[in-house]
Image 1 (tube, helix red, strand yellow):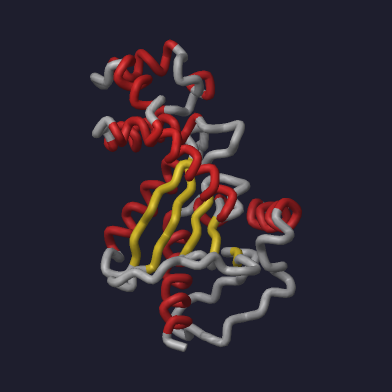
Image 2: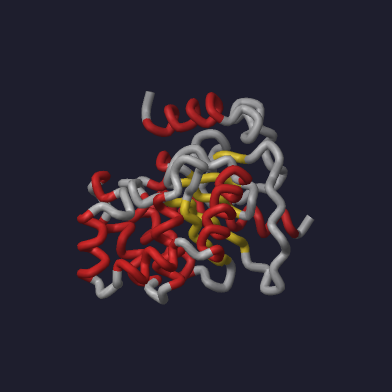
Length: 224
């Protein structure tokens, strides 16, 4: 069983009520004769019931990227999606979301606190530098050293983290993770309908091709 087959099996096993059965998925009536053909359940996955995305005035398609700081594949996914959204800025908008559960709030705690302190650059940089799982305690000496190295005061960080605003954002991150049925990372959602996981995101060219296919698919569906 290759990685894509394994990913498909895991999707069916862990989220039977969230995603459509790839075997029984209904093929879209839309065809893209000039594009490669990608298969639901193999190259991407579909929600059984699409999650409603509020219409945007600019009509851009929303790409949501769920990540965690202990995810080895999330940094490369971040780079690929950033590049794709820049190249296709007139068609898509990229939104990044830290994955969170009641028992795992490390990523949103770091992410939202750094952004609140005006250090979005560090919120993204930490994604690339946090390969060591021993870093994943906010009061861990390595993390405190990392903050000081980048001129962030420990006291300011802890104080900001404890504010109601940050705690509410962490709560919202938990709710969003549940809403989109995130069970693996990286986890990318296109317009609330289609999902890409590591089985597609491992290769830049492959990811770009599937994204092009799905973005075109969404635009074509909107015309109906």
